[in-house]
Length: 162
Length: 138
Image 1 (cartoon, chains in turn red, yellow):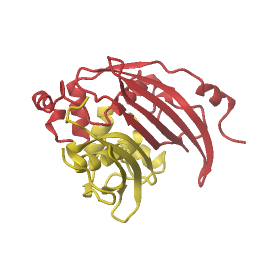
Image 2 (tube, chains in turn blue, red):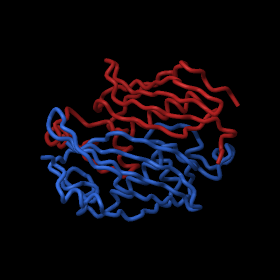
Image 3 (cartoon, helix red, strand yellow):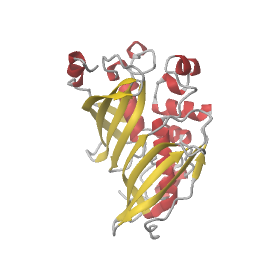
């Protein structure tokens, strides 16, 4: 009974490599445009400085961009048919993924030039019976720090496989 | 520093209807490769959805933007939790709003939501904002 096999449980114990991303003003501008931001502090260095920041400042949820690169910036042969990075997909019969719950705490803001390190671990994996069959919940925990060792963000993200 | 709103105050509703280009930009800017956000045949045939999905994290951004543009420079987001209750598809309009549920001397707690015009709530969240001294506060 249950779809989380012993193999999947062992997969849960794996360690994920730390990932480092040097955040450029271009990275920030892309995410800011993609989300419809218009405040010049995300695009214009002078405007950001005038507002009290050392450089162009990232939108609040920008650490998401860092953790996605940590998971998916891999060679194409490590990407599954649905576009998910292989290293993120547990060996389960439930393969269709959707976003579940997200909880984020914020520390220092991200500005252009920051080197953000993300550490990742699998916090919990559990299953429930859904209307259309088993659902597997995989909760990852991400900790983001900057080049000064200051906490930028801590995020728990649950992906649901059905 | 402007004052924060009181318990019960409601955010102006922001209406968002992301286009296919918006969905692609969000995927591209975050290097999110999941096909359900840009490959319609895969999304309908493999995953059984009626169309491309509006990203859960993009809806999270909409909730944050709704609160940030309302509270302005008086406060800074310290924490947020949100979850997705129903899928939202390309072509859907999302109305995003929220209200203050608690207030103390340091800040406010707000509840936030995104819903379709028919009332279906797609994403709901709770956030805490704390007073900031200056905009570029460290």
